[in-house]
Amino acid sequence: MSRPRALVLLSGGLDSATCLAIAHHEGFDCLALTFAYGQRHGREVAAAGRVAAALGAAAHQVVTLPLGETVRSALTGDQAVPKADSVEEIGAEIPVTYVPARNTIFLAHALGIAESTSIRDLFIGVNAVDYSGYPDCRPAFIAAFEHLANLATRAAAEGRPFHLHAPLLELSKGEIIRRGLALGVDYALTHSCYDPTPDGRACGHCDSCLLRRRGFAEAGLVDPVAYVEE
Amino acid sequence: MSRPRALVLLSGGLDSATCLAIAHHEGFDCLALTFAYGQRHGREVAAAGRVAAALGAAAHQVVTLPLGETVRSALTGDQAVPKADSVEEIGAEIPVTYVPARNTIFLAHALGIAESTSIRDLFIGVNAVDYSGYPDCRPAFIAAFEHLANLATRAAAEGRPFHLHAPLLELSKGEIIRRGLALGVDYALTHSCYDPTPDGRACGHCDSCLLRRRGFAEAGLVDPVAYVEE
Image (cartoon, rainbow over all chains, first blue to last red; front, side, top):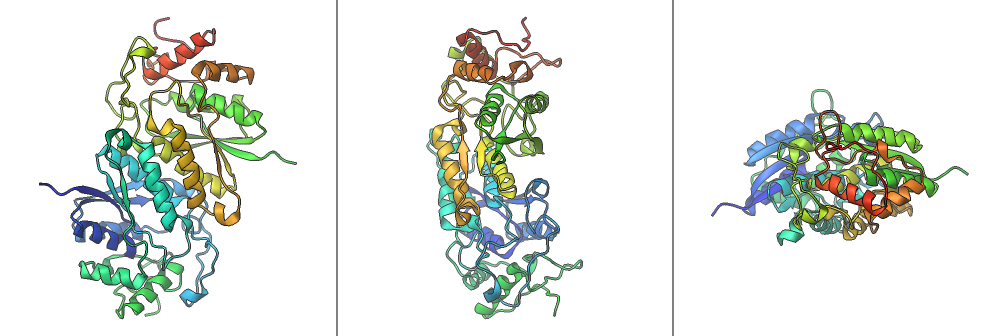
């Protein structure tokens, strides 16, 4: 019997790489899906390609979306990415790196592709523990999207509901890294930094770098990616 | 006091034109939003521009999405558009003109734009009476998307929830047309046909034409657009 297929959102960062490894480990034949949405830099998309290949994705699809023209965010525009010296300095507010409706938009496109290819399992590597407070990374959002997906499509009429898996939702960053390493993820292939140098080194001080560094520290491991200050 | 702003999805068809007229009549300053998503023909998008201008939209934004590359539908591919001689012949099944997750994708992008521009009212001209049975036109879908929108964004944190208006949801096509005419909609500017001739005449026999023609007949009116057989 062939393996069931799943569609896995893959940004090229640490979380989505781990999510792909988990989906593969759970027995799914994975289509990795990456969005080139007008990010400040293309390193994430390149990293996604490396990660998809390394983790045995059956296919990797890159979809281009014009979010740089339609939504306002420090990740798609010229606004400066905030920097800090520790995770504790990250504010409680939703930060300027939040991209309005990003996960809703990504999941909506993923849903269209999944329905078109008879895939019913979607994976997304969101996390609501060591995260930046983005509203579309929380458990209630995931539950609401799964509910919507089954109303929006042929799924209900066909009696084959969609399942939206978010296996990292309740893990700490350290737990995510340990889980990924146990499944063979090479984190040197991933890219997390919101504001890398032109030669690709991570800044070390954006929210994404701070959370990643603390995760490796918690796990008692050395992060294999290069940082500016090293 | 300035008028509140609303974002109105505008395909260029009869329903969305009426929806724009209603939003305007309800006192909103309207940003009309059209998606060039890989439709078989560009007449809808051109019609949307004419309708937006005629109905006094404050702005009209066209966003290009690559659905032709990602989803399977008779509306974005080479598959034939089904034809019939009357609405009664339209099957009970979801037809091949259904575009997987289309309204979810459109509303997700609309949500990102609305959040980026501090708009909280969204209008969509879906209808669940005289329609093709598309699952993403039903009341439960609209309610689920509004619920999702308020979890996915800053809206909850800011105490300014999104409202998703679907004023045509429970109207018959005849009622929609009468309502639009009362509000000054010029239906000659709209385009409904899924499969027009190269010179722009409507086929008269696709689901969209059949529903439109029956609507005008119900309303006791003559449809001002040109059909092939005339």
